[in-house]
Amino acid sequence: MKTLRRALIPLALFPLKNIAYSQKKDSIPLKVRAYFADKFPQSRDLNIEFSQTAPFLFSSKLDGNDLPDNKMKSFQQLKASANIYFVKKKNWLLSTSLNYRYTAFNTEESIIAETGLRNDFHYHSEAVNFSYFSKLFNKTAIYTANASVDGSDQHFERIRGLVTASVILKATPKTKMIIGLAGFIDPSSQIPILPIFTYENKFNNGWVLDILLPKKLLVRKDIFANGRISLGTEMDNTSFYTYRNNRTYEFRQLEINSGAIYEHNLGSNFIGTLKTGIRAVPRARVFDKEESFKDYIFEASYKPSFYVNVGISYNPFGKPRAK
Image 1: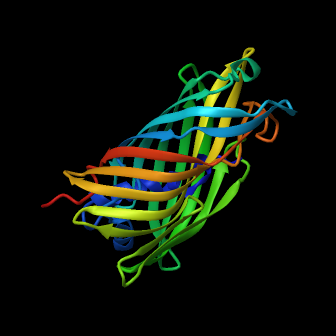
Image 2: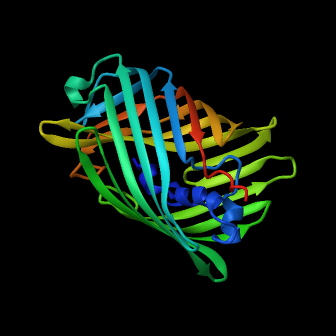
């Protein structure tokens, strides 16, 4: 299973989405500012959120042998993230991304003895991002380079790299489009190169098609004075490290969240978010950190479950400062 956080364009583009709001009027190409300007920015400068799923059934295998069917009684996550900008120039910027995730779960039948998994895990990642703006075929081009490290509450574990090159093909009040490529410097990545495609189109009835492949596919609409509702599908992931018999193992699962999202601008650059719907997890795996994802020791397949997510963010770069 792929870990989308490491292999998707949001990791490369998040710093650009934030910084576009805080730059002076002549310090970033107009089309970049036009693309990323939004009352509800897709990345959040400071964000905290909590997720809870309803109980669900799952089947699993250990070393290729079937384990008895089990039930996940609870699955909870707390996430916190920050994007901080060190240097902001006319054609380039330097920033950092900080992420923390706490995952806790309880199963009906304990799997600790068989797998070595505990019931709660701490995961963190830190990245330094460099972005450069220029022209390519008379279009605004964005180049990024990212170096990151992650780990648990016990150790730092992996060092990774990510480079992207993308072009803004269109940035009008109605339609916005970006294409490009992302390349990964990561021994655990299953896809060395991934295409970038971002598309947004505003219809006359107020609905907006918002595509960020393969991260999300949504239709959304502003409602009330400061609210927005979105319907569709988003992808996320859970990853953490666990230790057994003096060896390090990594847990990864891909999550497909389908349903509704409501966001409300609370003023003073605060945004509240509520997400709910059905979460599908095609499979989850545990594998030796030194081995391939395909060489797993434990695999689980989950039944779809109901989930709810609440969050709040503070976005000091969300709007240009008045002069």
